Image (cartoon, rainbow, N blue to C red; front, side, top):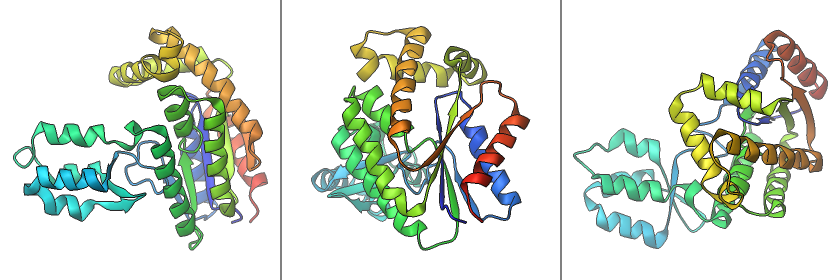
Length: 283
């Protein structure tokens, strides 16, 4: 295949997961060796889902404070960008409540990569993308990523920290430069009626998801600056995000296409994906 990376992006409730899964199914039908990574995959090769970062000084303090589990911490620590990353899911697999207290987990959560200052987050994430590209170039697999290329930079930059569009735009462009050797294809899933698609997602997903999502969008960064509240305020922020992501999409020079999924018709959506992938990929 010509491409080693297909990126699926779009707003919440647009159908990104469905699109990613359909793309994976189509390529497998064509005997393409694929690896699909949906949002939230703790083993994502280009992102940190549930990773905690400690500077070398802070990691030394962590080892000293929780010396009884020091061997486990050292075993799982990955040296990156002047410090260490601890995969939270691996710690959860080995540590139980008799080994560490709630205060330990509080320290781990407070050092989550997506709670770091934006500059450090960008440094760590771009480093991981670079490592992924180097690894992907050595194999024959085609990777399919859902929503970590545009969504994550926009979410942590614009939504969480209220960073300028210039900062976030440059962040995404930097990632685009990193993945260029993989000849990537970007599929952006669109919804013409954003309020309808988001409210549909709220109705279909667990209440914990919608409450957490709306809190994230309204009580920090962009939402806090603009004084929005509740589901309507969340939709206002999503509208602003939609406009910004459209600007990002237009600025990118990688292979890209927008797919309208407003009707949520799986058959026509799959046919559209097949058409895009077939015409965007050379076999």
